[in-house]
Image 1 (cartoon, rainbow, N blue to C red):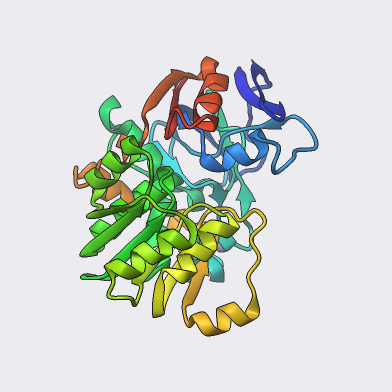
Image 2: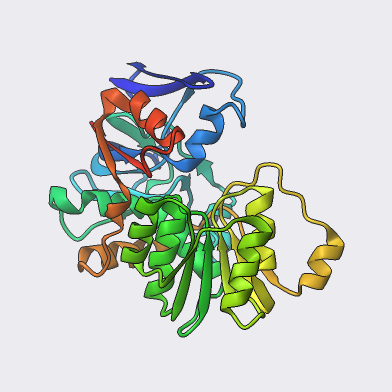
Length: 338
Ligand SMILES: [Zn+2]
């Protein structure tokens, strides 16, 4: 098969690779229906998180099970499945408490920007849809694999409740689906921080009630103006930079909640500042597996259409252009079809 490899900064190649095979009896092989480029793929792409050797790319996936190992019992060939970017056994204490992305047997998934993918711990990792879906819903199902699951975790970790005032920092795909998630959880006011008109439009479609274009401390001032000088109940930090993190903490009311789901790069917090901010902090790699059954249901029943975040669709063979378009912010998120 041909698959996507990153060789170094801005050097993405779609090249001949060995077909993945079943290595462990708990593995499954998936025939990919659609894959995509993640915001977190841009960190190594830009050389900010350097790689030491050519690396297979892609960790968001859905498709048809082609083959399973001898120990796999619940997942069957022919099923359409969605899985998370971390494989998990779904039985250990961390999985049972809803933190599958900290599974004691977790393995990271790589190489999903290809026609075939090996998924370890198939029974614990993959969730099957009720039937093989129509082509129209595949993009929305694909978002459940990471970007929607991560937005959902952002809203959950920020304790979004019915009637809450919510701020979302970051207008990338995760931020936008954080808005959708907050709306599903009953937030009354959702303030999106974005200065890009296309993204503002999608933010409103997903449920944002207000838009703030200012950033940093100026952005914080605007949030304070809009919340009687107090700050928001729940703030979702969906970027991973120092500026975004401080903007999030300073926009939150005393007693409020900040979630952080963007992989941090260069973020440092001062103990003094945290002490006096009086906010709850919770974040990390989203336990997507925990939310998959619920998210698949919402998509399957037509209650949400998170697939709208894909504003560029390319054949897998043009994956390099998919990265370029996101790097240059010409695209919010690139969908790749084999
Ligand atoms: Zn586990």
